[in-house]
Length: 435
Image (tube, rainbow, N blue to C red; front, side):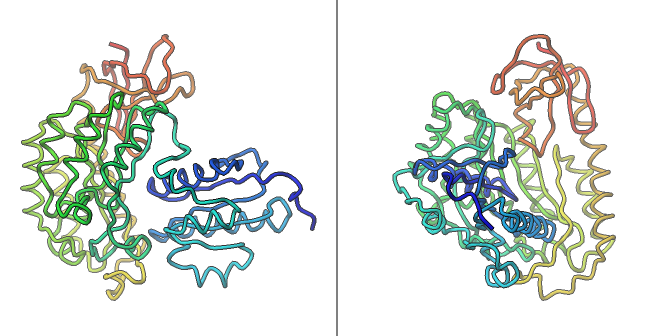
């Protein structure tokens, strides 16, 4: 079938999975653009002839979504709508040999650290001088900053080290330069991401260097908010909180996935921490930063989980009253430490436990939102939707946390900061007027 190769190539990048994958796609876009190539991210115009699917291989649902997306693009290729389909990312890294056999119509498969090879396949040169340069796929007022790659932890449930390798920090100088470049482009908020933030610097500087990095980034003129995602609780460096307390542009927000609160489960998951140690850590964090927003992520249905383990977790949530909670059902992943265990919690029970926990958290979230009534918060405007503005306080990250519905007749722009007085509270959102 004749295809559209007479036209200049246009490449569309489709990103699945987490914010770390999104950054990889942004870097790829930046490199292609620097090669004078026409590139878009998740374009709906259907005017491209090459697709790169950046996949996720974290858990079953993510893998299924990635495979389905690849198959959809392959079908378009068969119809002559596309000339080429390339696949990269975590799923490709982990299952390349199997996928090559199952979906031979894909033109080439690439792993997570093969950017130069992808560029070569697209007839583009890898430009080392562009390190840190990206074409943002996010709105222009916020961006993610990936400070390291890979992970040295050995959590029994996690396949990330299989797909991303061991921990590798990026230098403070490179990260500061990248942050400064983002601010010049209009970015007001930067979210620090990694598989594990608190390990940052141990490889490069032989010490935990996250506090130093935070200070250096906080010096960036025009950077209003810095937000921390994905910190590991065991041996948590409390000096991070000293910097958070001292620097006004570091959000009083911490994303710390705890995964469980039953000692049986924590031990089985190889989390290197006990429930009492977590309680002591959370107390220390709250004492250092009163009013800090704590977000955590949990797993329901890990092998061997009993009803009493779930009750321990619920009791822990009632006691700790986290501001934000997310939950996954356990996914039995080959190559992980837990794969040798029997996946003995039925899928429907995993799902029911997850729903019960989120129902409990919904009440806590509503109560905590009610406490904000009548108070005024600095709020970043994200967008206008259905005739109203939506924004976030420093206690809310993009996509995963609360939104603030801003009632005003004034014209606001994305990236504006306004003072909002909270007038209504809901389970997961707030509403207010300009103060």
